[in-house]
Length: 141
Image (cartoon, rainbow, N blue to C red):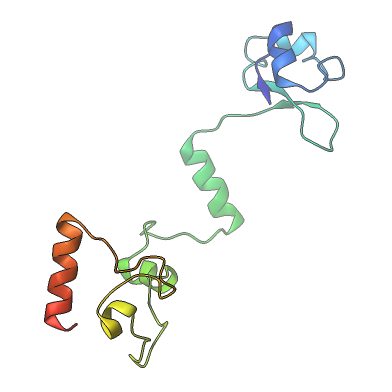
């Protein structure tokens, strides 16, 4: 899309795949200060390029028009926490509803790492990771 009634040749070259095939905004619109506001040319894949004209209306006019159309409205446009909770998934939520989830290697064997020997003699943890691992193993969780 290229907005404006009088774009330069360079602007048209950047905006369109084939600027020569894209239509120009008609002169009678481009020369009219009020009519030229909101004018542009658009080129979408698989469609012929077109000149378009947008229009402005105050929010109150849009609101009135939507109400006249019967569009449902609400006094609370933001969703409640309960509404968000209903549609946004969480990690682990409902995955094991009965609480019987599989145990991790840390829980069942007291450590991480591959069993094929790639990390033999054991995973090398350093600093805070080593301390956290040691506490976890000691606590038996």
